[in-house]
Image (tube, rainbow, N blue to C red; front, side, top):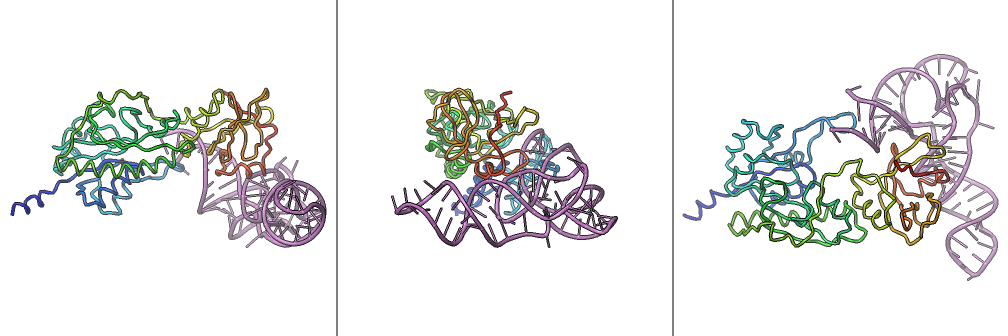
Length: 326
RNA sequence: CGCGGGGUGGAGCAGUUUGGUAGCUCGACUGGCUCAUAACCAGUAGGUCACCGGUUCAAAUCCGGUCCCCGCAA
């Protein structure tokens, strides 16, 4: 009889998240019989070209799986807070969502946890995956921790690391961390439910370097070729495919200019001489860096689709193409 | 109604302003050269110029509408 009562008191969570990365985690929890009382995600809003109404990736998944969806525009709204309290969830699970007000993350009895795509305390902030690659890290990972007032600083519950390939870009690492993250999160939730968690202060981890990982804006994605070829390569792959490193180019006299995104790059050992023109290499366009040329074989011009450099060269001349520096 | 670029053989582009033969670079195919591959040479195929309507003797081109792709911005 005692067993029946524990079954009836099955523990539950509320999930909060917005993009695709969060979907994978939600999916793994849902498919592994974790009881999800509600899914909280960003409100539908006009976005993108033509300002069409867009739904978050998490909302789409939740809808398909008949989960209870809440989309408050204000997380401090009293009605929302009382609805949330009413759910009586034991734990809040947050992945790639907004910053929460204290009144929310202190609500559930077992606390509020977050999955972060780095080895905390390294790479705190909104863009940990990008920054790890940009800085040429050879290792990264995922961390689950209890949310506290300052962002990404709470007690660490679990952590798992993964190697970064030397030519790997964000697209592939993002996917791998998403998969790893869903395992770690599932394990974390189960451990919390079974009271098997021993969270550790981040202070005891601080032997590792602490790099920040702030949100990246388009403006920050412009390539600065006044650096070594390996730095430039790391920069490009750390932004590929999103938000993508770009260059401003002009033909002839600088009358018109176009931006070109650089998707796939490779450092060469061809030394840069005096004239800093873009050249045609064996396997891509060659952009001059401080020391060697960077070979780029997949690009996109504004208004055009992404294409292979050979396709670009079939209809465009490289002769008078110049990089605009400012 | 956020701003802007674009849709032309399989790919990338020119041609549109000033209507009148469908063009360039690559790819494909065939043959040549070569010990051989790439290259190179010669030749061949492949397009209702996104779609619908209008103007005109004549529309890729001018006018009106629709669909689709993309950059910026959010």
